[in-house]
Amino acid sequence: MKRISKILITAMALTVAATGVAMATPSTQIWIPSTDVQAYKTFHLGIDNYIRSSKNSAGVREPNVYDIGPVFGFLPFEKLQGEIGFDYLGNSSTVNDNHPWSGNIKLATPEDSLFKLSPAIAIGGYNLGPALDKGLAPNAASGQNIIYGLVAKTLPAFGAVPSLGRLSAGYYRGSEKALVNSSLNKDNDGVLLSWDRTMTEISDKLWMAVDYQGGKNADGALSFGASWNFAKNVSVIFGYDIYNNKERAGQNTFTTQLDINFP
View 1 (cartoon, rainbow, N blue to C red):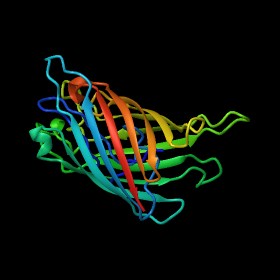
View 2: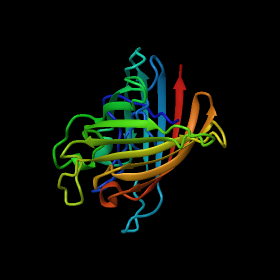
View 3: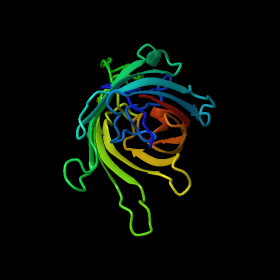
View 4: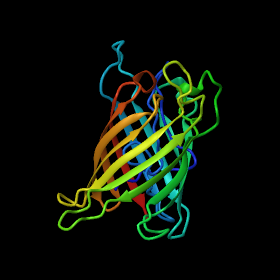
């Protein structure tokens, strides 16, 4: 399954003026964080592109977004795992590109580690960075300072029927200054939901996912996509993001996400 790992700060982007795409880049599904964690002493490099699918209501194609960031697994324990990383994000917006750095961190326990049939549990933070003043915060990449919690469970196989995949659910809360709605009132929390599965009937190299982040802020989105492992340590996700509030996030985006793991 897909890993786009990162540190106590994650990247996101917003477009010029009043809109922009925001991304999260710890180990993720397509858009939201996952309960996956980069393995101890391994290094991950994620290179993500978000390409606008259409022009906005003014007939202008908003800036695309480019994000690159490493993540490193830092805990040696079997039942408690951790990753940390940072991101550099650019989207041709003066406000955002003056503050392109952000970081993230995650702690997690794998499934069945606490007791038999226990879910995976993760807590973490992303889009972490210095808080900007209220006038700039809604159009900057860093400073969302999102904290989240997730649980996930892989559905068991039933007879000849294979597992139907993994379900994840959680909640996030971030900066009241950065996560706002169209009226610039705070909209800084919401649900995190996802389904993902390796499509073994077709190939062990194929993985698919759908995820959702609640909120009418720049981060709220429904995303779906598929990943293919081109090599043991290299995979690429091809996905699509539908934003809950295009006034804050901009027009929907096609995304390609290159993931490279180094032992």
